[in-house]
Image (cartoon, rainbow, N blue to C red; front, side):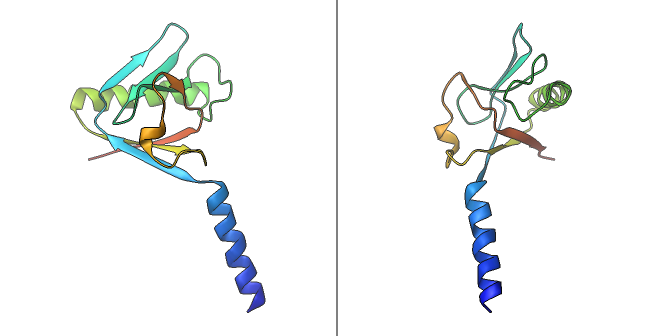
Amino acid sequence: MKKTLLALALIAHTFTAHANIACTGQINYLGYDQNGAVVVANGANLHTICSSSVQGNFQINTLACKGFYATLLTHRIAGKPVTIFYNDPALTACSQIGAWTNQPSAYFIQMAD
């Protein structure tokens, strides 16, 4: 019983330390700057989720960033919402994403049907 409680405590601690947040909405803004940065707003403030030229501290690598941009552009044109997932324990709400900030914790996008 003690081993089970310890295992559950460790699992709970893991989820707390690696909090994920999902921001869902229409893509109101999508930009791609001269340095390859993908800037997006989908219900949160404008923010950079990756760079197609230099990975830096972004979780999304440069090759994947190009795919993210293409996918986001397709869904913007189609008028479909997307969900962007972030792995940042400091974020507890999408409204905390600052305008024109880098959000290196973005790691996954999910498209609605």
